[in-house]
Every structure is written in C-alpha cells, then in structure tokens.
Length: 187
Image (cartoon, rainbow, N blue to C red; front, side, top):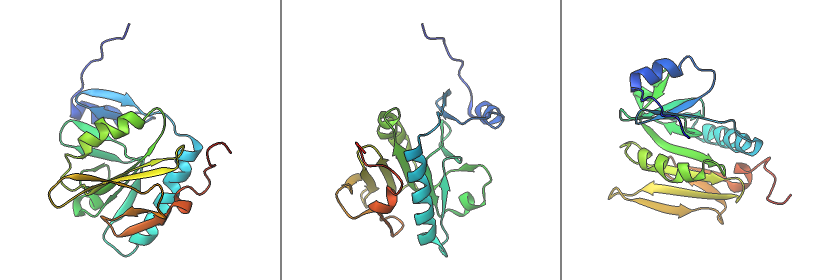
C-alpha cells in the first residue's frame, strides 16, 4: 500500500531541496527523487557539454548540466541533463533558471516515458524554449523537437544522420562525438 505524500509548496520545496544531499524534482506539490545515472549517460552528457560549449564560445549563451534547477511556472522544478540559455537573467542566476533555448535529456529505460511525456509537456510551456532533444544511448538515437513559427512542435529524427543538430543555436555535434565512449548495443 502506498503512503499518502504530503503536498509541498514551491517555497517549501526550495528550502528543503537546498538542504538535501541528492537531487529531487518537483511537480505540482509532489517531490520525485532523482536516481544516479549510468556510465553511458555520463559520457553523453559530458560529450555534449564539451562540444556545445566549444561552439558557443564567444556567444552570449552558456551550457549548463544536470545539477542546475529549471523552473517552469510556479508548479515545476526539473534538473535537465543539459540546457542552453542565452537569457541575461538566467546567465546571472546562482540557482534557478527559467528561460532556456534548448533542453537535452539523455534517456534511460526508467526515465524514457517521463522524459517523452510529462516532462516534455511541462517544458513546452516555456516561451523561451525553441528545441527539446532526446538522446537514447541504448538505441543510439537522437530525436529533436523544434518549435516552428506557428508555435507547433515538429519532430526531427537525427538518428540516421551525421550529427545532432541544435538548430536553435546553430550548433551541430557529430553522432560519433555524441556517443564517444559509449559501447554499441551488444558489445
């Protein structure tokens, strides 16, 4: 039998979360513990962080990784695997980001449905977000969702292409570099 969980306000969550040794996401009063990642996940996050940061050098945009909080409205705080922001307020914050241009999530069997479903639905509420990219280390696939001029999200499957294309930033990372250090399936 599941125990009833006490609902938390955003303010209570932030005060509590800042005292925790691990990371916990927040959605509509509920708190969800984040579990540790596997090696492949860490390799991909590191690879993308390095390659995107190199390409953004000299631009007013920065890459941030999984330890940074992203707030969506007053009811959600997530820890994206990677996000890029060009927003002046975000670039000056110490703790909470609110206006990323790009969010990238590296999928795992346990988070795939969450990242594709609820998280993407919540992220779409961010007016600044132009692109949402999902990287699957097991399938070695990359899917990008881009907001078009009409505000609709369009899927771009980059799995068979030469590179992960972050069109919102004019950046591109060859798939060989995205998956560098990650064993192919069945290896």
